[in-house]
Length: 308
Length: 316
Image 1 (cartoon, rainbow over the protein chains, first blue to last red):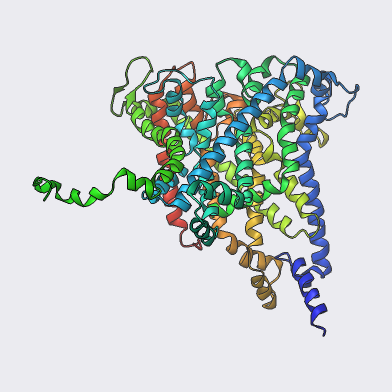
Image 2: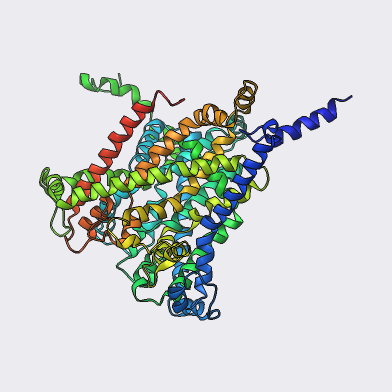
């Protein structure tokens, strides 16, 4: 009769059990105060180091150039300069470059998801004859850092064999190479490998072909991993710099992404306007992170598990 | 026999006659192929072929005007005899070494502390991860202002002034440039390692802690004898991944200092970029490919030795 409350207590106890510090330790005053102080210090440190630079950026985005240069840590000594934001938007065309960045990110996202799902489905569920060889070839690319392939990739894009027409300034030159990401394929394949085979068998017996199996069964069951790969693909695209610089750096400036364009205008832009442009560019990923926080953190943890 | 006698060599082929394209399609071969095709095309064009092309280009003279000419190992000797080569290797090693000294223990300490937080742990993780979502270009250009590179003395010197420390030169000095880049890089990248460790820490078997407690182990002993050994596989992997990552450092030296002052931040990747796309040397694609290949080869050999050497400590 006392079983139930005991169990409930036990469960609450287990939920509280976080790790290293057991409840017995936790009740010791030295541990409680020591660790409590450490946690408060850690929180203060994380706020200063993690949030501080971003808050400073937003503050300086609406501070005059003069004030930011003379007294960078003062809080609006001569009032708020909203004009920085309108200057950045109207004169520096930040909106256009942000739009380009979003277009590049969406294209990279679609192609990454397309390649990762179809490829992983073929390798995991359909299991073609040379699947093991293809998988091995995919895994080797994980060991070749992408940056060392920039030179041959660049030569291939500006002077492709047989076509002899430069793809510089073409978004496909960013979308397609970014989808050749073995990490996404492996992550997706691991997930597909763990889906219950019985469901596939049952579907097959019911006359479900490989295409319907893919669209009606495998894809709807893979929502968590699709979210993780989406976040990785979009974040990577937002952070990407060197490859877009090579493809878009010398061509029509109207096609450039924020990352490619900002360093080019830095030398001859008033600091206040420039920081406003930086703040506007940082806003999209920050808001995205705040909305999809759990997905970001779970995905990063998952990537660690895969590496381990 | 309906067919004429075949030469002996063709005999094994007759067994395969049954496999016609029609049966291949019926067995689902076509759909397998169709699903695999995008992956094969994209990886073939943008990963496997460039790897082969990299090796070829390192042995060729390429200027995209004339057809490529095979020139043996000339590109490699050109790179090795370039006075900038040793400078780039030294700077890259310095960057990687410093990034390891600062960037490696910090995420571990932060994540062990966060894993003991009992309220609002999500807030701690989110704060630690926030710098990771800032695009590096935005981060670097912002930190340039912090270092006082956009006029004035900068944010850091202002803060140092509060405690009476003289203004530092940061990225404008040959001796402080690399440590300054490492400082930014640690800020920008530590968050994702913190999250990886946090995920690994939740996987540590709680009974081990309880057993250690019963045996009278204190907090530090449990940390040393239970937590760290349980994390050793992930610790070893993040270390090698960090070394591989920092050996390819580009954005920081490129945007902060353009390799300066006086080549103090010229890294291997910056030299590759200069060979291929820099105007001073011209389009030396061959040298760039040779140096890229040397970097890959070095990292591969280094990783192999590392994995061999640490195998005894690793759990899997």
